[in-house]
Amino acid sequence: MATETADVERLEAFSAALSGSVIDPAHERYDEVRRTHNGLIDKRPALIARCRGTADVVEAIAFAREAGLEISVRGGGHSVAGRAVTDGGLMIDLAEMKGIYVDPDARAVRAQGGVTWGEFNKETALHGLATTGGVVSTTGIAGLTLGGGLGWLNGVYGLAVDNLLSVELVTAGGEVLNVTHETHPDLFWALRGGGGNFGVATSFEYRLHPLTMIVGGLIAHPFDAAHDVLRAFRDFSPPDELWVVAGLVHAPDGSGIKLAALVVCHAGLPEQAEKDLRPLLEFGSPVITEVGPMPYPVMNTLLDAAYPPGTLNYWKSSFLPDLPDQAIDALVQRFAQAPSPMSAMIMEGFHGAVCRVGLSDTAVPHREPGYNLGIFAEWTDPATTDQNIAWARDAYAATKPYRDQQLRYVNYLDDDDGNDAVRAAYGPNYDRLIEVKRRHDPDNVFHLNHNIDPG
Picture 1 (spheres, rainbow, N blue to C red):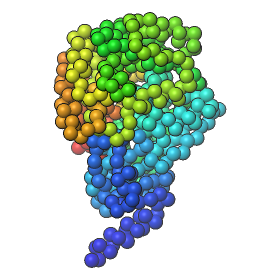
Picture 2 (spheres, rainbow, N blue to C red):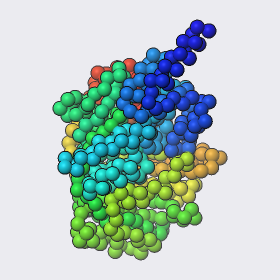
Picture 3 (cartoon, rainbow, N blue to C red):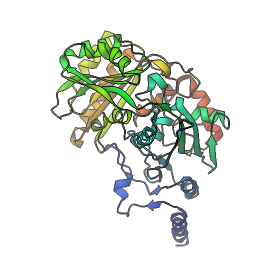
């Protein structure tokens, strides 16, 4: 009885100390708050700490460690792999931490860990500024950035981590650090791609670039032209300003019709965009051509409808240094068998600024030209879960002869990707990441992530 009383008193003290709220399984919003974007994830934390500021995060870490509770950390976005939620532990939820401050004179912005890229872009656009963010506006800035940060502006401005200036980080010991290249060089290096292994990132500061309008949109071809479309994508050499994503996708109307598509974003001058895009616009006989000038934040929303919250997701991914005809054949053949009208295969081309950063300048080793392949199984009927997962695994296995076995993009790793996949995601940077982990989280308090085990 004394122990139970002490536990109740400890929980009451914790709740009183937070500016935010503590949600337990009896709370009316528990099921809403515990769920992530991926409907396949169904974990039940013992408690959820909805933090409103850095002080709340410090309190939550201290409470969890004293109570012996496993910690998970959720930002404002997707967590497709589901590691933002703990079963039976304490989830530190940053979703209500939405502060954004833009300094237009310094061309910099600081944003808290619960911000999404849609919210971020809305604020920076007021000042005619932008930086590399996610390709879907509902993606959280925290998870995307800590994992590297692919986005529409890769070619001209590099990854999100290449534009990161500082991170406010709460460590496992409750210390609040302003992490920059000058203050904590090894930790700053590790945070640029090392995921949530080193603490809770409560805010991020980014370098911004002048950008208001882009020329972008969708070019879709009939599926029977898929081989030719992917070969044209492979043989096309875009300038830095133009990022092209190729996809084997389904028509957005739910009809199940398969398409071969290109999504383009040109961040240069309109007249240059017209010239650079002409080979893609004039190729073949597309059934959809919706390309034109638009505000950059609008570009960031074009794929949102393809990833609605609550759908069931299972992802596999890797890096292809080349895209030979045999790989194209394997992808087209497997996509023809996709059982769900929501699934897709995408190839994100690597070129330009993202490839001019040294292999070990950040924790992200993806610095060679090539293609980031994502096989995204997405469906709504739980009865078809096994079928859809099997399809994704089979399609992924078919690409094995063409994959770089040492490169995986950490943000696309799935929940069943183990330590070998994490090691592959970091390649030659893995051992250095272990050393940083040992200094800042030797007890592996932050292990519900694509974990770097301190050993």
